[in-house]
Length: 560
Image (cartoon, rainbow, N blue to C red; front, side):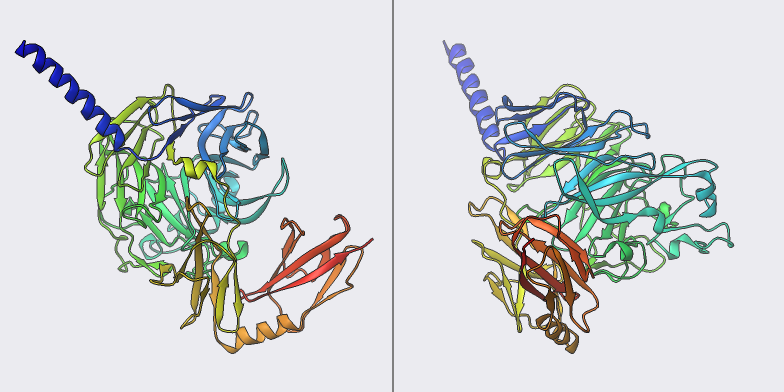
């Protein structure tokens, strides 16, 4: 009888313990899609299927993400592309909750092709990683020691313009930021790579598939991009606040360094520095977002991190100094090793990801084995599931996030010395990438010249949305620009669709036109002649912002 009681007690404890561990997990859903499959699956907290998207004819390339409102974005392994290997994509689709494809965009030619990861930005644009083909002659001209074709990399920001179309509104290319130390006759010659860690050494591990980027993330607070490199065993941070021309140069942007590498970590030997190589095949570089413990840290999946046969998730505290990063000249970027490491329960020689969660838990995906599991802040595994097939990534979401539409990206306007955010339910202001304590009103009056942005929450308080950064200055330059904007003329108005912008002294400005419904129908830099003749008759709003982000809006009328 005592034995029976003991068995029952143990059984009750096991069930209770199992339920307690499940209760500690975060979120409501788990999203995944096995590679080359034609379905994407959403599991509930019991790891049973809650929803499936079917995309027959569109095989999963690598990444799948949910956006607010239940929209699914995913990369597609497009057939017939000119690049081979994995994971080549060349295509991205966006599906609504009911399974309709609402955007189907190809980014693939004989010269370039998207691959691996992507990121959806606060403005709805998408950042893509893409291979970029360079001939043997081009490689030689840059001092490359490899005798053959090389696939470099670029990052492209795509604005959705139609059901199957998109516009490249910003681009950053590795090819613009390279050095070599062997041929003094070449324009990119430098005596020592260690003196210029902002540039990639073209002759470090050079081969056809040279860098093999595989993860990308965007930090809206600092307007910076992080990417990871499989072949060079590094994470990089670059400045997105540049325009495309600045991104190809060494000046400009909030950092003042154009498109040069602001920070790199994981393999000091790649730029001639001494130090321990921490990363050994890495994927999924990303920041820990606001609202999550250790927010602001950079994290990545380290496939051979814990050992040659055991993967890890590594975190580092960045040596951030405003929009730049501290480094002692002649030494490797700090830190010298990881700040925190989770040695995984298994191993995947390729792919894989992690997600840090608001309650301190972490989701880990061991890609090639298809195993996904969650641990709590103490490192205790709460659950594990084998998804079946190679699963490059997996992510958790809350029901609130999935069911609520994203608010419009907030905007900032200036009235004299006060900045005002567009109407929202909650606000938080930042200066130079740092949260301003107590600045939680719709208006903020800066006390010094700096770069400001505002964060809002959706009406249901499910997620954050960030504005573009606003460069505030109280100098005469800003006042002159404001004066020029107020004197700006648009004519003829009404017109048949052809408008001229006239403002003496205003040289650099950004023009955008919105319909009555708030749809963006035109944008351009320094466009003094605007052709809107393809639009229907009606009232539109022309928004013009100067270099210091001071802006003015004019009502224009098309009447044919």
